Figure 1 (cartoon, rainbow, N blue to C red):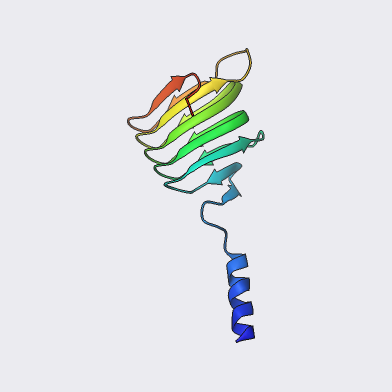
Figure 2: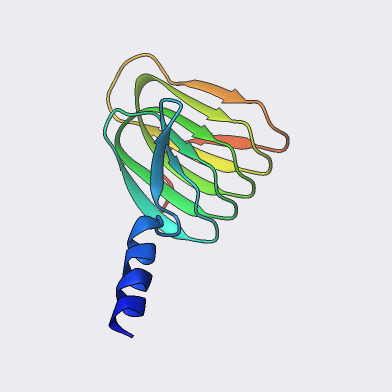
Length: 121
């Protein structure tokens, strides 16, 4: 019995938690769906791959990619930062942290919207 429990514990340790971030292709990926979460930006590009989330990205976000569907996203972005939406039916509100050139906004998917200003919490 003790060996069985130890093996089960090791199996749990080896699997990433649901919604855990994974570094791949130069992005820090967040793949959770149906959650509300605040993520701290640290200069690393971030990809939001989940669906139907309510995400707040705070701090100095430099590059954000939204690939999922039906997400509400709030982003603090640096001057000349990049926000891309490749998914569908996403609503992204952005707030520029300091004066400078505006961010670059790309809506590549269908039925996506950008809004300037802080979203209420």
